[in-house]
Image (cartoon, rainbow over all chains, first blue to last red):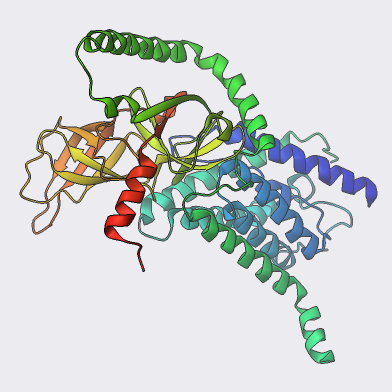
Length: 170
Length: 274
């Protein structure tokens, strides 16, 4: 537990720094953002207690918010993802259940399962994030465009990193 | 009582979720309120340090463009100096000299693609910056100071859907409100220009001086597109901003020396709002 706790801490810092120093600057076509830090919550081990999950999500979202000058925005969206995550994992359990001690990753469960798992959660995160930032549904289609392009961008980066992640065991 | 506690324990995940979300929502609402000296934004030392490092790395790739901009500013200042030198031979009205003071600062964090964009700069309280001051650049109006820390400040960019700038059409003298619609970072809308006015493409838009923030006559942009829907009370005017916010590297903070005097005068005359 202690050992994995340290790893989680390191991942936390890495996701935070990569997000605010690299991906904060990368906005494609002025609409597509990459919020890679969502992957941190998505990829935590399956049996993670949902209270811990939400606590960590709040801390990460809050830290991101400090850099984006949007206090509460990223924290709110990420806590929502953290809350939904375990229910969603329970709903889409593959035949034979999950392997103990594994993360819900692409390498362990396959691309199709991973898409079904992560795409809705990323979409919900981006949807809540952009519509709260826009302050409602007044600029609906432009905001929707941002949500969709950003979801695609984030998903591509998450999947790309999954293929090249160093702890590829199978 | 026992059953109540059991109930809470059973649904502890949901209640924690609710509590956290309510707290986040409170932060959101609180943060939207204008003007504050808060710790949790990009003006705190650690965040600004990291952003400054990331900015200075990126700067190497845009040195040419920064140089050009500085060169342009230099040229403009020289012209200004020349004009001042000539003007000094004629007696100048005293108040225009002391009215404004400028602090120039470097941008260390800037975004244009969000709906609510903020700019972090590398000067703060120690340079005399206070919340509510205006920020301008060589090419036009930038925004106003939202919060300051000791060495850094956060500005609300004009590219923020909540930000409004009282403006005036230079040629006709009519007032309007410049506000960003959240889409194109080069364009803002000029609202509330009534039907009877005849704005033309190419008209200059300046700040009006009716707001407490910007000095009068700061360049905002040039009218790019004018539409008048039938039965609409106001024109739809699109204004191309003078400053390209994607290439912003230096700003000047305007310290209005007479602001306290103006505010207190208005307070005496109009009275405290009940």
